[in-house]
Length: 208
Image 1 (cartoon, rainbow, N blue to C red):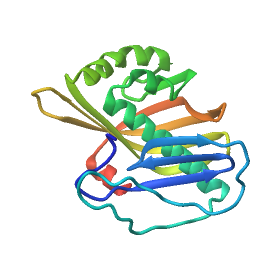
Image 2 (image 1 turned 135 degrees about the horizontal axis):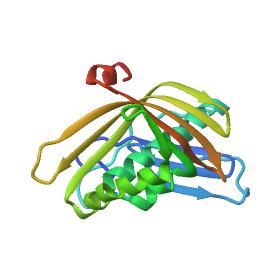
Image 3 (image 1 turned 90 degrees about the vertical axis):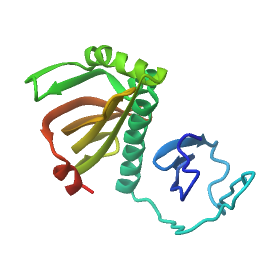
Image 4 (image 1 turned 60 degrees about the vertical axis):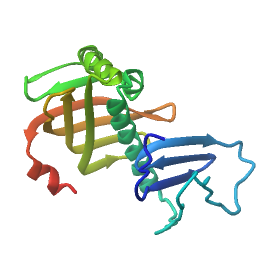
């Protein structure tokens, strides 16, 4: 429900792949259903439940067949959307679930690398403060290069991280990102996160 824009249009994405149906609302994962293979063909329908007031309408409906690469990128987009959700909600356990147990964080700023698990311990305080309402945080991703296959991914781009302590001013950082991911038991996990150099809003806007 938190993903809904109650004052305007919402973007709903439905992906049916094999026996699995996944949905997103404004890029935020909403539902994940896995069938038993009974229904392999037929019709699909879109249904909404009307609110107490107002009107619900559809527009710009598009249906497309997913090729292997499109399906892979849809899954990766959903992965990064989940990372964004966990940061915004202060869901530390959810964020940890997006990381590979053997993950490595590489820092261009400090010219060092160390286990991602060590970084998570440092970041937990901010997650807890966000969850408690003491601060606001958000992270968004844009990519310029996306290589991979059905079980590996190399993603290159920029992420925008914003944070604001309650009563304070918002601070925003743009960081060049290089990430390696692997698909483990059906879920994508980040194996290496390389936070390279600081970038600017101009660099960010180029990746729209």
